[in-house]
Image (cartoon, rainbow, N blue to C red; front, side, top):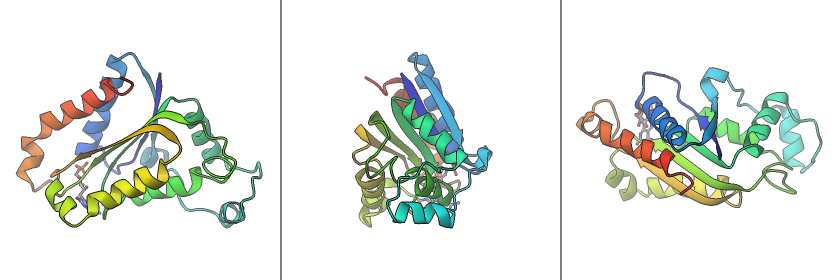
Length: 195
Ligand SMILES: Cc1cc2nc3c(=O)[nH]c(=O)nc-3n(C[C@H](O)[C@H](O)[C@H](O)COP(=O)(O)O)c2cc1C
């Protein structure tokens, strides 16, 4: 089986980078393959052009899709699962990943008469600085899940899962205390992805 990983973090000096590496180790130890889009490293362009906006907003399924977007479409349709790995920025994915959705979830591919394959699994792995109790108390966790699972992945994957690594801010003791346990969780999530 093949997993397409969309990874979005501006720095290799991050907890999220370790989540990515542990998850990949789990996938490969289970005998699966992966393809990686590292959005910052690729310098993926995330602003829609006017032409892209007009195409999507007017539901025009024209073949003039930008090369970088087409490449992402091909990666998706060659995979069995998709995994998004990112840090939470202001209760959302980083703007770069939000912009990836703006452009890659294009009309005729991800909505309308869609050519996007229905994937077996969609997975979100995100790190959040706040503890889970705080995210839940204000409905923020639920909001993030609603957007990612109830909108962006909805109808595009057979099964979806949202995994949060919480309390990972640099000033929190929890970050260091839970480091190994969290990376084991990332590894196991990769290893058991298709179980
Ligand atoms: C600009 C910015 C915004 C952030 N916003 C949130 C937030 O809304 N909620 C939260 O729990 N953590 C937030 N964080 C913390 C990140 O999620 C944090 O960087 C991450 O969990 C720690 O992992 P890292 O070492 O991979 O960056 C924010 C961090 C930055 C830099």
